[in-house]
Amino acid sequence: MSYNFTFPDVGEGITEGELLQWLVKAGDTVKEDQIVAKMETDKAVVEIPSPKSGTVLSLNVAEGATVKVGEVMMVIGEKGEQITAPPPKKAGSVSVVGFLEEAEQVLTGKKEIFEEKVVEDVKALPRVRKLAAQLKVDLTAVSATGKDGQITEEDVQNAAKTKPVSAPKVVKKYDLYGYVEHLPLKGMRKTIAKNMVESVRETASVTHTEEVDISELVKIREKEKVKAAKEGVKLTYLPFVIKALIAGLKKHPYLNSSIDTNEEGSQEIILKKYYNIGVGVDTPDGLLVFVIKGADQKSMLQLGKEIEDLAEKARQRTIDIGDLKGGTFTITNYGSVGGLFGTPIINPGECAILGIGRIVEKPLVVHGEIQIRNVLPLSVTFDHRIVDGAEVARFVNTLMEHLEDPDLLLVE
Image (tube, helix red, strand yellow):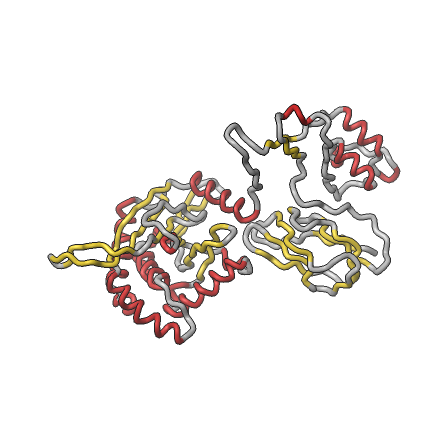
């Protein structure tokens, strides 16, 4: 008997994914737990294993298509077995889109193509499903009159008579000033947009900026990176910043917190007694934040190695979903690309985020003399509902003390 393999619930609130690649084709023999497809979710690229052994009777989703959790992706059965399966889902939107080179009136006479929307919880033959898609009829709302509760073509036609058919959506290739391109907001970019809007809507964001003289830290890092390289670790400034950050969070714990709404509807501040530091990394698909768990328990070299490994996995989209969750405070290093100060947006579920700018050489007065020093710009965006500006200023002062005097990092 054939088995309909649906897109499984991979957890972490994921409801859909884009099929990047099939690793099998119709007619192939597969074994249980064999990887059959690669899916891109809003968090990472995941490998989809086969739930059972058998022969691939059909692939029901085209590469590039968006698949909902629970939607049939493929059918597995015995070789030669006949099936009645939903037709393959094509890549693209289910809405009707017509590209016009001239005015919208030119639509008359053009061929209109409606993609069939597969409905699994109703009884209907493929031709009936196709008719429903053409007439834009929701099969789940149709009263069935056929044998054993099966929906007939007449049922669909009757339903269409009482339901107005919406006009196809028209998308023009140009606006008043020139040609344009329409790109779907999907995958990771869609998740980033959702999280950023949620953060701005749910927090009272304020940004505090400061400059810190890290000339001594530059000297120590130049010396220590040679030793680190012998251990196979590329030592950047981030491990030092993380250590200084943790010192600041321990002294000012409200920066390592979040606001939670309980069942009664009242809110409370949750102080985190652990230090999971998120680090933003620039990837071809957008900003991804991986989380270093228990950062306070790790050495400089351990932090450097973990940052390097997770950053590479993030860029390749092979990072484990668990490495993207559980952060208590986030660092974004836009200075590695360019820029001095910024107004970084707080990661949802946290109180604050630290933005690191580009290290620059500047003349500073040191002990009454003008010297050229290495200066690191800092920007801290915080949730004013949890902490006030004065507390954030004290937190930044602690952070600066440890960056200006690296010996404090070694002692602690």
